[in-house]
Length: 209
Image (cartoon, rainbow, N blue to C red; front, side, top):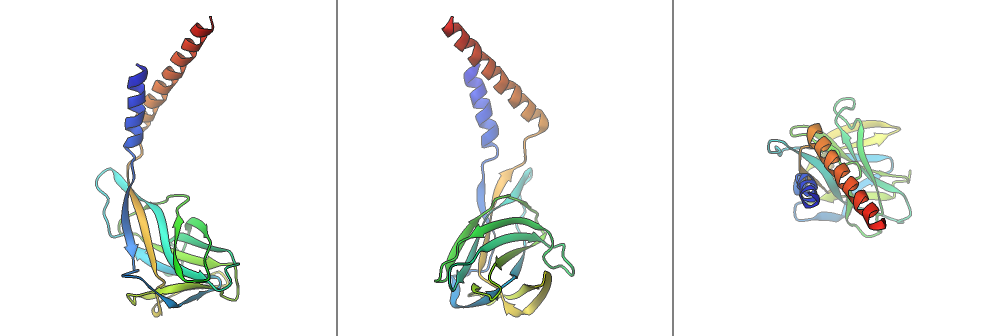
């Protein structure tokens, strides 16, 4: 019984094994380390999830890779994911925020997701880079594909210009994960683990006596 319960628990956990997928990327073959968008408050790049998850599965944010640098490498920077609920389709609600360390030399930095929000096929999201430096020491380096369209934040207000700004280089990686186990499955798993714990306690008591 003990062995079967272990196998059952393992099967439930394995049903949620993650599989990586690229949801969005404008990196091309690289990025332009000599040019970029100056980041004082916030800069955002939009993307739309174009991959459909198979039945019973969903995409959740895995990590965001961003090409950026900081001229003095002493400021606090963060990469965040926002939904598209802002005024006029600009960044709205923050879904995830990850603190990052930027080097003086431009390079691709990976920000691993903390909240792992679900990314829905057909929905638009925003990758946002923010810096604590009001003078714009942080720089989000341009992608080499020359894709235009970025939003900038001033005094908490977002303005999107689809043509004026070349996008900062970014890749969004998501994990394909099976749906959350049904409540009945979780209940069965909990009952099984409780029985396993009870058997273990009884065995210990017998050994003590």
